[in-house]
Image 1: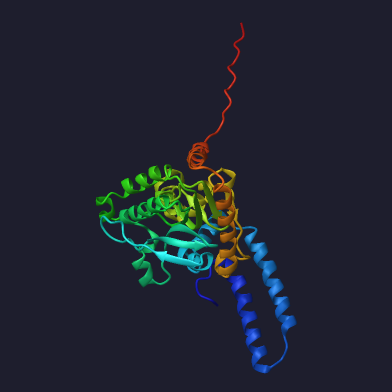
Image 2 (image 1 turned 90 degrees about the vertical axis):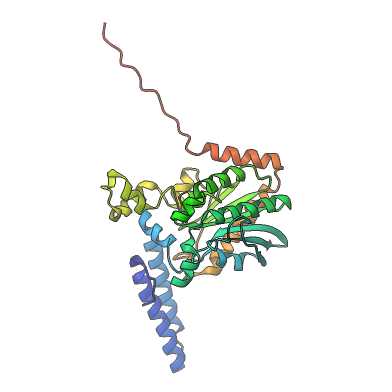
Length: 331
């Protein structure tokens, strides 16, 4: 069975292995078994549909963290025709967890920014597991200011469990760096599109997610805190991290929940079985959504973009309540 298979994916992985073996035997023996293979593939696709129609918020959390899921640079390679990476915050260092640079999108240059995780242990350490430090957010802000200077749209890819919380990051002002980014992004006079492609965790995500259009992949998650952290902090869950599945449901981390609550503007469909099963289709869907969003935003003036962004975030969290009727006392 393939590595990095989630528990609910095991029946699918078994069918994938059977299909691969049947293809191998067919080629080795020179016998046409295309009909058997087609039947197995149809059965596998039906099974995927059944399993994925009943995923829990915790299952979606595991999918968003899937080790084989495409990361920011995977999308950059497919979505854009060219990418010129820029480095450093001009203050301290170059944060490898935050990538950015100019990219060509259908003959139009845009500024791309995003968090980058790593595949193996060495790369994960190099990328700090996708958790950016203060210099990462300051680099992102420097590049966004550069995009504004040259009147280029900004496209941000969000995929982080949270910002780095090490002693060094606290010393260098991680909270201030994120807060500054959020404030400055509200004042950028160019279109901003943000896409949650994996984990959208806490302030680490918000530091580059103040956008006119916030898109979210079907099996991504977006939350103020990771479910494990929530379960470990709240007495409602007995301060027990093992109750993370319950916390995930309570946090409403899924794309469907975020769309319903108005936190995101659009859910981008993923290939059958998740983005990790077909990078090309996943990237194609992301590209179409980015182009559609930029086309609509480029019709707005700079002042309209600012007001659009402001009003979008002001609407979040608004709710209405009815006054409880007062009891009428008998005379």
